[in-house]
Length: 282
Image 1 (cartoon, rainbow, N blue to C red):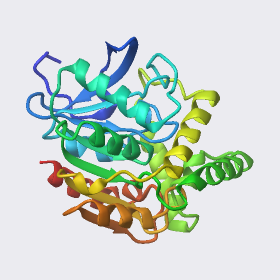
Image 2 (image 1 turned 180 degrees about the vertical axis):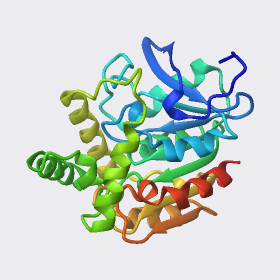
Image 3 (image 1 turned 180 degrees about the horizontal axis):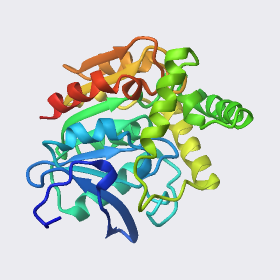
Image 4 (image 1 turned 60 degrees about the vertical axis):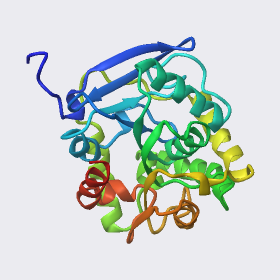
């Protein structure tokens, strides 16, 4: 493979690192370089290995895509910050270290919370915003994510399953099949994989989401970014009603809700959603 070859498969994306504010951030990039990159903001407990290649690859066909490990997670150094706002500060340090002054954002779950706080502080940084499986600061019942998460981890342990099968997908036949397929896709990359998040770091992230859910709302009416919001219609982690709440708060935003789907609706319906996201970000 020559240096000029463009990698568009997330399974083949090289791992890189960059130093910013005393932290070394691990990241992967793929797709054609040049122009505004699409930076992916990952979910609770997630590492670089938790992005669905069926979502990343179609976007990387035409866009420079960057995924990264949050501070204190995976191959990134440092300690997980205790608030979502500080996680947004960390992401800004990472993006600035890469030399970008304008980005598009693709976010899922906790990543969407971090992305919102990033836009609040740095409104000119983000051009287009994709918010999936997420909700606004102070969103109703978002703080219940802690109890839901621990309950589903217990259920997964008892059945020797991946917790994401319970947390992201409905427990009907279609949901269970989609869950198994999703977990299999996450294993397609075989080299240079991340270490899983530590229990302490995971608990810190959970508490940060709880604080975010119990905080005073941000004024999202100031957002001028073109925004795409997506979720399943039965999200147990971040209630689906909060996607509708975001849609009401962010003027001119688009909302896509998938039927008989949960928190991972975009992964269950990846064949439908990936082209929508790729067009939106084109």
